Image: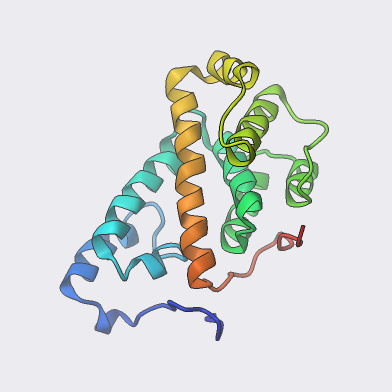
Length: 188
């Protein structure tokens, strides 16, 4: 459903340019199965959309830290940007992938979850430091590197950056929030 405030609502497929079709089709045919929310506004810049979706496909589905931890990093990023679309999409996925409801609720409330497995605690703290301090402490870096290695640390940074980009796109475009089994993010 499109909201009256959505600045870049879905374009009818028959109105797509040849360039838009060329870059949209791999998204539709790929693991996402459709031109979903973040790519609706990005369709206005088809080549940017293409590069963005390829980066996201790697980070979301094949990152070195695995799907459960990727989903947690997405939720922390969505909370930092108060990005309701990403929250609506990814909070149910995080729950399905094994992130505890209590962890999801604490992240939504802007609090550090109290009872997380060690790998989730490291991901949470790394993401919070990166977003809020704009850097990562030596102690948190060392824990992340020990658990995930260089590739995992770099993928974790990439997840934060990628979902920050999508948050900027959808917050600026006022992308309509889809229905979700999880409550929306509260105002902080």
